[in-house]
Structure formats: structure tokens, C-alpha cells
Image (tube, rainbow over all chains, first blue to last red; front, side):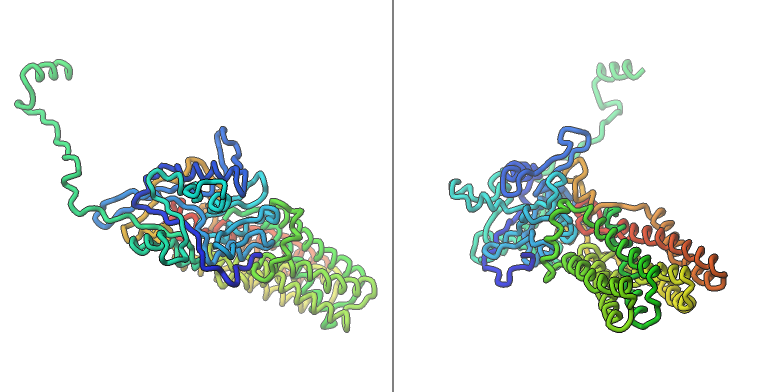
Length: 250
Length: 316
């Protein structure tokens, strides 16, 4: 049903993404694609994959931003983005068929592909670009928070996390219950002042982002020494070197 | 936003069809229209034809048109579903009203009551169509106070102009009075559209690359590298861009050619004798159709979605 759950449960499963740690390797996006192309919303169709204009469905994409402060000092921030499993998910309420729904038990937002008519309205309603249309299947697809992995009892317990989390080589992604203030992810968010994206849109996203830590004030010890300009005067080289230089520049 | 032809045709054609049937219902109930068989046949064929054309066109852009019936189920939360329900429901009073008119030659009294019900239903349907767009917070151009009035007055103006052509063709005296109402609606359409564009220009956007990434406290944010080298669904659907130069030309055409000229032609039709009056009114219909097409194209093409903040926009 496309109305949001009347009595949402206390559990709010979601991701916490540490922008201080992410190195922008895209491994989470690749493993997401790999797991999900055989998962709940399979396949994640690609069109023209080896041609000149490949496009396809991805649930997770990594953007890279440059942030420049007032002193002109810049830093690069890699920014993975997938569905934020909003508490007040507009993609769910706009759905005319009931294909889009938010689970009462854990807050995961899913699409029932059997009921989706492919009107694309949910993708218009989502501020975060979490929904991608599968031209081939004619239905909307989105991050499932690996619902087919996190509850999968055939997997060892430590593997029961979303594919993006288990694959991150830098440990920049965390998964857990953000509805429980004592959970590891909630404590992490509290400690690092994790924030929600575009709060002005009023969607109350569950996922949180941890800001990059401030740069160390004095970086003189770790910075490479500046290059000094090449000298060309009388004493800049030996007699032979100057003679060869004159010979070659002639 | 990508201006899909199917959706442009849907909103303009069904708007004109609902407008026409709304006018037939109101004027019929007031006893201002004769229940003439030919007039009824042509008017309802035109009205229902435009509505069906629009509704069919709206299903063209669906991934699964055969499941369209499912869209009637979520009227509690979804404006698109409400629009579907209202569109289907309108066929009941409008169909019965048409039947009374064409088969029994009645359009006042009890039939008029059906007509009024059909009119109300038509207005509700157009309002639901407008709310599909106006309810989306992600697109500030649509989340405007002028979206709903715009859809309403343009539906009533286009339906009204079609009826005006029929009134002239049947040489009904009410045509000389109704023409002024049509001119008023065309003028209102023009005014609402200008106000819509003024509000759009004055709105400097509510979201920024800084709020989209949450990195604003570190400094100014700009996209350094997109997630992929090629385009994707989001960029194709949400990232449509129209050159400002072309947008301005098209706006001028919509205002002058689409609303202004039909208004003047309607005025002209009042002083021209019989056939000429009808001819200029038909010309006005053609210009309004083109103008609405352009206006609706711009409604989509000029609208910016906040997701573009993740793809290089600074402020939306």
C-alpha cells in the first residue's frame, strides 16, 4: 500500500557513510550491482553495455565533489549515494498502484515489480535520485538495502550486511538500526555529528553521512617542500655542463 | 524535466476535452443551449475524443500500460491515482448527460443536473492532473501556487474556445455573449502564465549543492567528477536543459500567438459576418492548440529537479 505505515516500527535500518574515510574506489557500487543483478530486483539491466553510449540501472553511485573554503583551500570529497530509506518517503505516497511501499518492520523502502506500471512518478518525487527506471523491464528499481542478504540465514552472520557495506575496503560504510539510540551506528552518528541530506525537502531520511574531519591546522611536516626555480646564472652549473647547455641550445 | 510528448498531449488534450464537457454541462443546465442532435453529437464526440486521446496518450509512456488499472487503487495518498479515479468516474455523469442530450433530446432539468455533476467531475479531474505536478516538492517550478490555477483556466479556456466555434457554426445567439467569457478566460490564462513565470524568476531555489551534500560548513561545493562517464536515467529524465534564448522565444510565442492572438481573433469574430466569424474562431483554436503545446513543453523543459544538484547544478 502506498500510504506510509500507520504504526511504523521502532527499527529503522539504514546506512551510515563516512565521508572522511571514503576513497572513491567505487567498489561499493560495483558489488551492489553484482549482488542485486541476481537479487530481489534482478536483473539490473544495462543497455548498450559495450557500445558507445552505455547506460544501466545502478542502485549506488559515487559522486566526487570539490569543497573550497574562504581561504581558497580545497579538498576532495567522495560521496556515495543510494536510497536513504526516508521515514516520510514521497516516492511511496505518490505511487498510484501500491507497488512502492515502506516496510513496517524495518523501514526498508521497496518496489513490488509485479504491480509497478512504470509511470516514473516516484523517481520525480525523490529528491535524491535513488530510483532508476529499467527500460527493459518497464518498471522502477531501487536500493533494497540488500533485503535478500541481510536476513539470509544461509550466509554467515557477519555477511548479513548490505553488499556495499561488506565490500568497502576502507571501512567507510556502516549498517545498522538507526531507530535504536544505543546501536553502534547511532552512537557513531552521535559522536561524529552525522547529518541527513537536504533536510529542507522534509523526507526525514534514515541514512546518515559523517562529515570529513577538519584538516590538521599545521601541515608543514607532512607537506612536500616547494620546488625551487631552476637557476641559470654563472654559478648554476659546472663548466662542462654550461658548455653542453650552450651547444644544445644553439 | 524531460518534456515527454505523450504527457504534453495528455495534459493539453484531456484538459480541452474536460473543459468542453464542463461548459456543455453548465450551459445545458442553465438552459442556454438547445439540445440539438447535431450539436450534441459533434460536441460530445469532440469532448470525449480529446479526453480519450489524452488518457490513451498518458498510458503510452508507461512501462506496463496493461497494468494501468492498478493506478485506480491508491487514491488515499497519490494524486496520480486520484486523477485516474476522477477521469474514470467522470465518464458516468458525462456519458449519461450525453445520452440524455443525444438520444432523448434533453439537456435541462434532470439531465441538466447530470450535466452539472459532469462539469464538477471534469473540474475535479483537471485539478487532480494539476496536483500531480503541484504536489512535487522536488520541482520548485511545479510546486508553485500558480500551477493549479494555470491548469484550470487553460482547460476552461481551451474547452470554451472549442464550444465557441460550435456556437458560431450553429449560429446560436448565445455565441455573442459566450465569446466574452472565452476572452476573459484567455486573458486569465495569459495573466496566470505571466505570474507563474514571474514567480519562477523571483524564486532563487531552496536547495543548493551545499545542502544536497551537507558539506556547506566546509566551503563552497562543486561537482568535480560525475559518478560515471556516460549519461544515466536520472540525467535523461531530470536533467533536461533548455537554452534560455529558445525559452524566451517560446514564451513569447505562447503568450502572443497562443493566448493573445486567439483572444483578439475571438473579438474579431464578433464583428465579422457568419462564416468569417467561424473561420477566424477556428484559426484561434489552431493557435491556442499550438500555444498550449508550447506552454506545456516549457512547463516541463524549464522545470529543474533538485537531483541535478548531484550532477553539477549549484542551486535549484
